[in-house]
Image (cartoon, rainbow, N blue to C red; front, side):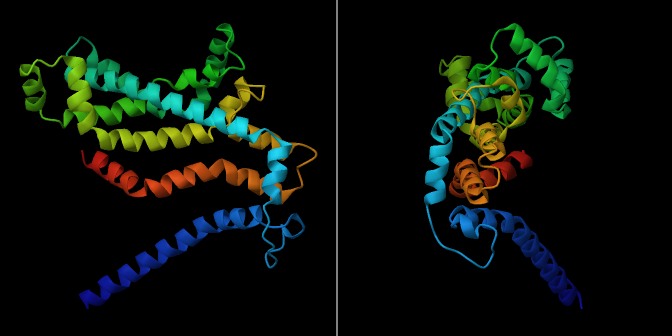
Length: 273
């Protein structure tokens, strides 16, 4: 009886997971199919004529290559700087002793629960006063420090035995060499987990770049796609719009497929620690 119950529960669990997977996959499947369809059959589910003309039309209708390079630069630079700031911040909260450390760390944690949208007005006023409107630095500046990254890395560093750090000091290593040769290699799962979250967030970010940029040279893919889709000339062209959308999401899908195993393992290990 107990075995039958377990079997039924597993069957229900896997059926529900399969159903949710199908529901999640349908929009992506429709997007990919429509991107490669002839535009005359874009809204017809039962017609499919493979073509690449939609991508040619998109590349001629908007500077998507420029948008693509802007997104790579913005997401990549933010992550690289965040790695530096979160490493020093997490190490200070995990290993150093100074007055007010616990209160300061609590203030960092409060920042995690505050949505970025709440800070848009003060951030915009600051960027305007610094005369950085319509620059890539304006998009990146509010995100160069990360409380979430510091929190994740601090928990990982606290789980690393102090003996390893003391052994490195006996070998003549200073703090910077300990960070580079001991802390960072042993914290790789936390960096991978945070890196995928950070890059996907800033690759998909739309509202803040829309507010602080107004030129092709600084717009990321998301803003360029929105302007392309909402323009009067292209608004009704579903096939071209789907092709442009596929160009935006394809790098993230490929990134997730390639690093799927490491991504899941990183979160599991980080969560356990």
